[in-house]
Length: 270
Image (cartoon, rainbow, N blue to C red; front, side):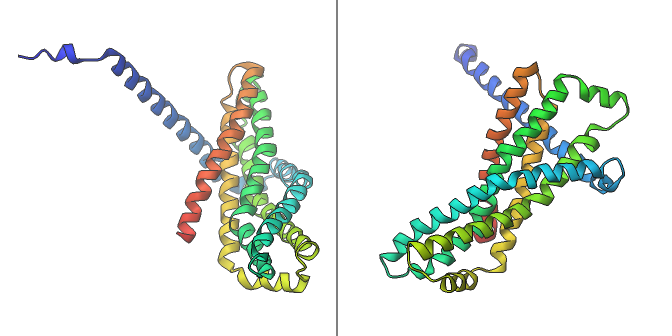
Protein backbone atom coordinates (compact mmCIF):
# COMPACT_ATOMS: atom_id res chain seq x y z
CA UNK A 1 0.00 0.00 0.00
CA UNK A 2 1.21 3.50 -0.81
CA UNK A 3 1.50 5.91 2.08
CA UNK A 4 -0.17 9.10 0.85
CA UNK A 5 1.24 11.10 3.76
CA UNK A 6 4.71 10.97 2.24
CA UNK A 7 3.42 12.80 -0.87
CA UNK A 8 1.98 15.74 1.09
CA UNK A 9 3.76 19.07 0.65
CA UNK A 10 3.47 21.33 3.70
CA UNK A 11 4.88 24.28 1.76
CA UNK A 12 2.25 23.89 -0.98
CA UNK A 13 -0.55 23.60 1.57
CA UNK A 14 0.58 26.75 3.36
CA UNK A 15 0.90 28.59 0.04
CA UNK A 16 -2.61 27.65 -1.09
CA UNK A 17 -3.95 28.49 2.36
CA UNK A 18 -2.37 31.95 2.17
CA UNK A 19 -3.87 32.49 -1.29
CA UNK A 20 -7.25 31.39 -0.01
CA UNK A 21 -7.09 33.84 2.90
CA UNK A 22 -6.12 36.65 0.54
CA UNK A 23 -9.01 35.87 -1.81
CA UNK A 24 -11.45 35.77 1.10
CA UNK A 25 -10.11 39.02 2.53
CA UNK A 26 -10.32 40.71 -0.88
CA UNK A 27 -13.89 39.49 -1.38
CA UNK A 28 -14.82 40.78 2.07
CA UNK A 29 -13.37 44.24 1.34
CA UNK A 30 -15.17 44.43 -2.01
CA UNK A 31 -18.43 43.42 -0.36
CA UNK A 32 -18.04 46.03 2.37
CA UNK A 33 -17.30 48.77 -0.18
CA UNK A 34 -20.29 47.85 -2.36
CA UNK A 35 -22.57 47.63 0.67
CA UNK A 36 -21.37 51.03 1.91
CA UNK A 37 -22.11 52.72 -1.42
CA UNK A 38 -25.43 50.88 -1.78
CA UNK A 39 -26.57 52.15 1.61
CA UNK A 40 -25.60 55.68 0.56
CA UNK A 41 -27.47 55.25 -2.73
CA UNK A 42 -30.62 54.20 -0.89
CA UNK A 43 -30.37 57.30 1.30
CA UNK A 44 -30.26 59.71 -1.65
CA UNK A 45 -33.95 60.75 -1.24
CA UNK A 46 -32.86 62.34 2.07
CA UNK A 47 -30.50 64.77 0.33
CA UNK A 48 -33.17 67.50 0.28
CA UNK A 49 -33.39 67.58 4.07
CA UNK A 50 -32.47 70.82 5.80
CA UNK A 51 -29.38 69.35 7.48
CA UNK A 52 -28.07 67.58 4.37
CA UNK A 53 -28.68 69.81 1.37
CA UNK A 54 -26.05 72.32 2.47
CA UNK A 55 -23.43 69.57 2.63
CA UNK A 56 -24.55 68.23 -0.76
CA UNK A 57 -24.15 71.69 -2.31
CA UNK A 58 -20.73 72.06 -0.69
CA UNK A 59 -19.56 68.72 -2.08
CA UNK A 60 -20.86 69.65 -5.54
CA UNK A 61 -18.83 72.85 -5.37
CA UNK A 62 -15.69 70.98 -4.33
CA UNK A 63 -16.17 68.29 -6.98
CA UNK A 64 -17.27 70.53 -9.83
CA UNK A 65 -16.16 74.15 -9.58
CA UNK A 66 -12.86 73.49 -7.79
CA UNK A 67 -11.90 70.94 -10.45
CA UNK A 68 -12.45 73.23 -13.43
CA UNK A 69 -8.97 74.82 -13.64
CA UNK A 70 -7.06 71.55 -13.95
CA UNK A 71 -9.75 70.00 -16.16
CA UNK A 72 -9.59 73.00 -18.47
CA UNK A 73 -5.86 72.61 -19.06
CA UNK A 74 -6.02 68.82 -19.42
CA UNK A 75 -9.02 68.85 -21.77
CA UNK A 76 -7.66 71.60 -24.01
CA UNK A 77 -4.25 70.03 -24.47
CA UNK A 78 -5.68 66.52 -24.82
CA UNK A 79 -7.74 67.69 -27.78
CA UNK A 80 -4.79 69.59 -29.25
CA UNK A 81 -2.40 66.65 -28.92
CA UNK A 82 -4.86 64.17 -30.37
CA UNK A 83 -5.76 66.46 -33.27
CA UNK A 84 -2.09 67.05 -34.07
CA UNK A 85 -1.10 63.39 -34.03
CA UNK A 86 -4.20 62.24 -35.92
CA UNK A 87 -4.01 65.10 -38.37
CA UNK A 88 -0.39 64.39 -39.29
CA UNK A 89 -1.30 60.81 -40.16
CA UNK A 90 -4.41 61.81 -42.12
CA UNK A 91 -2.42 64.49 -43.93
CA UNK A 92 -0.31 61.79 -45.58
CA UNK A 93 -3.49 60.50 -47.23
CA UNK A 94 -4.99 63.91 -47.99
CA UNK A 95 -7.75 63.40 -45.41
CA UNK A 96 -6.79 66.00 -42.84
CA UNK A 97 -10.28 67.51 -43.05
CA UNK A 98 -11.57 64.42 -41.23
CA UNK A 99 -9.61 65.21 -38.07
CA UNK A 100 -12.65 66.83 -36.46
CA UNK A 101 -14.60 63.59 -36.58
CA UNK A 102 -11.73 61.62 -35.09
CA UNK A 103 -11.29 64.00 -32.15
CA UNK A 104 -15.02 64.11 -31.47
CA UNK A 105 -15.58 60.36 -31.57
CA UNK A 106 -12.62 59.57 -29.35
CA UNK A 107 -13.52 62.22 -26.79
CA UNK A 108 -17.22 61.32 -26.63
CA UNK A 109 -16.69 57.57 -26.41
CA UNK A 110 -13.53 57.17 -24.36
CA UNK A 111 -11.14 59.99 -23.60
CA UNK A 112 -13.69 62.47 -22.25
CA UNK A 113 -15.06 60.33 -19.41
CA UNK A 114 -11.71 58.59 -18.91
CA UNK A 115 -9.60 61.74 -18.51
CA UNK A 116 -12.25 63.36 -16.32
CA UNK A 117 -12.42 60.30 -14.08
CA UNK A 118 -8.64 60.16 -13.65
CA UNK A 119 -8.46 63.84 -12.70
CA UNK A 120 -11.37 63.56 -10.25
CA UNK A 121 -10.00 60.35 -8.72
CA UNK A 122 -6.59 61.94 -8.18
CA UNK A 123 -7.95 65.19 -6.74
CA UNK A 124 -11.40 64.66 -5.26
CA UNK A 125 -11.10 60.94 -4.49
CA UNK A 126 -7.82 61.32 -2.65
CA UNK A 127 -9.24 64.31 -0.74
CA UNK A 128 -12.28 62.30 0.36
CA UNK A 129 -10.10 59.41 1.54
CA UNK A 130 -7.77 61.74 3.45
CA UNK A 131 -10.62 63.64 5.10
CA UNK A 132 -12.61 60.57 6.13
CA UNK A 133 -9.43 58.74 7.13
CA UNK A 134 -8.42 61.59 9.42
CA UNK A 135 -11.88 61.59 10.97
CA UNK A 136 -11.66 57.84 11.48
CA UNK A 137 -8.27 57.75 13.20
CA UNK A 138 -9.18 60.74 15.36
CA UNK A 139 -12.39 58.92 16.40
CA UNK A 140 -14.68 61.62 15.00
CA UNK A 141 -16.68 58.92 13.21
CA UNK A 142 -17.25 57.16 16.54
CA UNK A 143 -18.34 60.48 18.02
CA UNK A 144 -20.93 60.91 15.28
CA UNK A 145 -22.31 57.44 15.97
CA UNK A 146 -22.50 58.22 19.70
CA UNK A 147 -24.55 61.33 18.85
CA UNK A 148 -26.90 59.08 16.77
CA UNK A 149 -25.70 60.65 13.50
CA UNK A 150 -25.42 58.10 10.72
CA UNK A 151 -21.97 58.54 9.07
CA UNK A 152 -23.23 57.05 5.81
CA UNK A 153 -26.04 59.58 5.55
CA UNK A 154 -23.99 62.52 6.79
CA UNK A 155 -20.65 61.82 5.06
CA UNK A 156 -20.94 59.24 2.28
CA UNK A 157 -24.28 60.09 0.68
CA UNK A 158 -23.54 63.81 -0.04
CA UNK A 159 -20.26 62.87 -1.71
CA UNK A 160 -21.99 60.19 -3.78
CA UNK A 161 -24.65 62.66 -4.93
CA UNK A 162 -21.97 65.19 -5.86
CA UNK A 163 -19.94 62.71 -7.90
CA UNK A 164 -22.94 61.20 -9.68
CA UNK A 165 -24.20 64.68 -10.57
CA UNK A 166 -20.97 66.43 -11.48
CA UNK A 167 -19.13 63.68 -13.37
CA UNK A 168 -21.41 63.78 -16.45
CA UNK A 169 -21.36 67.60 -16.43
CA UNK A 170 -17.59 67.72 -16.12
CA UNK A 171 -17.29 65.17 -18.91
CA UNK A 172 -19.39 67.36 -21.19
CA UNK A 173 -17.15 70.29 -20.31
CA UNK A 174 -14.06 68.21 -21.10
CA UNK A 175 -15.49 67.10 -24.44
CA UNK A 176 -16.32 70.65 -25.53
CA UNK A 177 -12.89 71.99 -24.61
CA UNK A 178 -11.09 69.09 -26.26
CA UNK A 179 -13.00 69.59 -29.51
CA UNK A 180 -12.20 73.31 -29.31
CA UNK A 181 -8.52 72.52 -28.76
CA UNK A 182 -8.59 70.22 -31.76
CA UNK A 183 -10.14 72.98 -33.85
CA UNK A 184 -7.28 75.31 -32.94
CA UNK A 185 -4.68 72.81 -34.10
CA UNK A 186 -6.68 71.88 -37.20
CA UNK A 187 -6.79 75.52 -38.27
CA UNK A 188 -3.26 76.55 -37.30
CA UNK A 189 -1.27 73.41 -38.13
CA UNK A 190 -3.32 71.53 -40.73
CA UNK A 191 -5.04 74.33 -42.61
CA UNK A 192 -8.53 72.97 -41.98
CA UNK A 193 -11.21 75.65 -41.86
CA UNK A 194 -13.32 75.87 -38.72
CA UNK A 195 -16.58 75.22 -40.57
CA UNK A 196 -15.20 72.10 -42.24
CA UNK A 197 -13.87 70.88 -38.90
CA UNK A 198 -17.24 71.39 -37.19
CA UNK A 199 -19.20 69.84 -40.07
CA UNK A 200 -17.08 66.70 -39.86
CA UNK A 201 -17.30 66.59 -36.07
CA UNK A 202 -21.09 66.95 -36.00
CA UNK A 203 -21.67 64.72 -39.00
CA UNK A 204 -19.79 61.67 -37.73
CA UNK A 205 -20.90 61.74 -34.08
CA UNK A 206 -24.03 59.88 -33.01
CA UNK A 207 -26.28 60.18 -29.98
CA UNK A 208 -25.07 56.77 -28.83
CA UNK A 209 -21.51 58.08 -28.58
CA UNK A 210 -22.60 60.88 -26.27
CA UNK A 211 -24.89 58.77 -24.09
CA UNK A 212 -22.41 55.93 -23.69
CA UNK A 213 -19.73 58.40 -22.59
CA UNK A 214 -22.03 60.03 -20.05
CA UNK A 215 -23.04 56.63 -18.70
CA UNK A 216 -19.36 55.76 -18.29
CA UNK A 217 -18.79 59.03 -16.46
CA UNK A 218 -21.64 58.24 -14.05
CA UNK A 219 -20.26 54.76 -13.39
CA UNK A 220 -16.80 56.21 -12.81
CA UNK A 221 -18.23 58.66 -10.28
CA UNK A 222 -19.86 55.78 -8.42
CA UNK A 223 -16.57 53.88 -8.41
CA UNK A 224 -14.53 56.84 -7.16
CA UNK A 225 -16.92 57.45 -4.28
CA UNK A 226 -17.06 53.77 -3.36
CA UNK A 227 -13.28 53.36 -3.25
CA UNK A 228 -12.54 56.69 -1.55
CA UNK A 229 -15.20 56.41 1.17
CA UNK A 230 -14.32 52.79 1.94
CA UNK A 231 -10.61 53.54 2.20
CA UNK A 232 -11.32 56.55 4.40
CA UNK A 233 -13.82 54.94 6.77
CA UNK A 234 -11.72 51.79 7.22
CA UNK A 235 -8.41 53.59 7.78
CA UNK A 236 -6.13 52.18 10.48
CA UNK A 237 -2.72 53.15 11.79
CA UNK A 238 -2.91 56.87 12.50
CA UNK A 239 -1.31 59.39 10.15
CA UNK A 240 0.56 56.66 8.27
CA UNK A 241 -2.73 54.88 7.66
CA UNK A 242 -4.26 58.06 6.23
CA UNK A 243 -1.40 58.28 3.73
CA UNK A 244 -1.81 54.64 2.77
CA UNK A 245 -5.58 55.10 2.33
CA UNK A 246 -5.05 58.15 0.12
CA UNK A 247 -2.54 56.38 -2.10
CA UNK A 248 -4.66 53.22 -2.28
CA UNK A 249 -7.68 55.27 -3.33
CA UNK A 250 -5.89 56.71 -6.35
CA UNK A 251 -4.29 53.42 -7.43
CA UNK A 252 -7.41 51.28 -7.00
CA UNK A 253 -9.66 53.89 -8.63
CA UNK A 254 -7.39 54.06 -11.67
CA UNK A 255 -7.36 50.28 -12.07
CA UNK A 256 -11.10 49.82 -11.60
CA UNK A 257 -11.87 52.72 -13.96
CA UNK A 258 -9.68 51.17 -16.67
CA UNK A 259 -11.28 47.74 -16.31
CA UNK A 260 -14.82 49.12 -16.11
CA UNK A 261 -14.22 51.36 -19.12
CA UNK A 262 -13.11 48.40 -21.21
CA UNK A 263 -16.13 46.33 -20.15
CA UNK A 264 -18.58 49.13 -20.94
CA UNK A 265 -16.94 49.74 -24.32
CA UNK A 266 -17.25 46.05 -25.10
CA UNK A 267 -20.93 46.13 -24.12
CA UNK A 268 -21.73 49.19 -26.27
CA UNK A 269 -19.52 48.56 -29.29
CA UNK A 270 -18.41 44.93 -29.01
